[in-house]
Length: 491
Image (cartoon, rainbow, N blue to C red):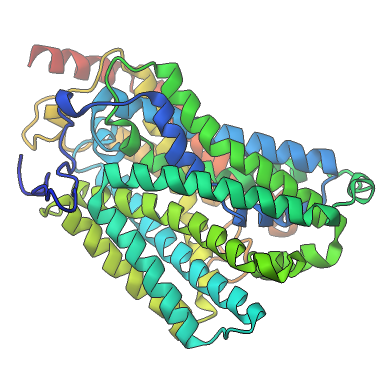
């Protein structure tokens, strides 16, 4: 095992020794059910309640909003579950397995996009946790100035970086405890705020158009499951090869979508019942939710809000470290995670203390990168579907592999074409991005009403890129995959 693939295990800290190397059979353990914990923990977040306001922003009825929440959550985490199969079959991180489709060097394209997304969202989540702490402390009269933000930032960053360095076992244990704690506190939040729900008022909302329903569904998809597809196999690679494929698909789908469905649906009911709350949530997603709470519950609320953000960032930093190794960094895994932690810390400092208005711009940038990630997911799932045998993991890590070529130009072109078309069907919905007015260039020519039409906010580019990536690769690479598998069988 090379230095790039592993770190020396420290008995005291329990630092994970594995990097992007193939997981040894003796270390493969557990059952698919254990995948419930990381995906549930990373999505039991009160931030999901705020999506109720975002969904209603499409002008939907109560029934339509609930349908969008259910479909968006389940379909997006189904993608996570499907990608998880590759981890069981390949015993390696997601972006290493992606080499089978793109080639060792061709895989640099999705690897770079994935890395930017992961580190970017780490930074956003830590920034939101810092702001949320200041908001709650301000309501309590404890001060919401720089001292509060500094302390919150240091604690949150320390937990995330430490978990990223310790690795898989520490993360799985942390996520299990976070899941239980956040479920309890979130349940109490629902109980304490349920008197603000008016079913009659929510039921009076007029129905919206099909394009609005589709847009809200895609919003939920991109806000949750689609953002995790490039990390899915990182957490299933430790499972025994004999694990049930159905279980590997089911538990991430169930674990991820269950809290999202409940919390977004509750957010829909809350915001449909109170127009002022809905408007406030749109401006301050976490802070606005504190305004309907009794003062004594603010601290537990802050802890669960921050815990949900930390949980997501922990998964991000672990996977971003693995992705950095996949891109060619020759260091132990824990060093890569530490490097990502430094980038995350510097990014958060810039967002919180240097450029307060930068957060919305940065989120716009990350949303745009979601289109090429969807295109990659389509290609990856098509490649996985075409394979009749498990990956030859050794050759995926061998630069001189005769089976997995350096670059698969077809996969690269399919991803690029799907991305360009996808970008032509989305717009910068935040309105904060600079130089993004070129997005949505296909909305007019295709008769979809242009950038100001009914379809502009439907985010069509995300599912379209996914479908084009899948169909384009499946239609052109079946023979290439067969030849590849024959080559690995010979060697």
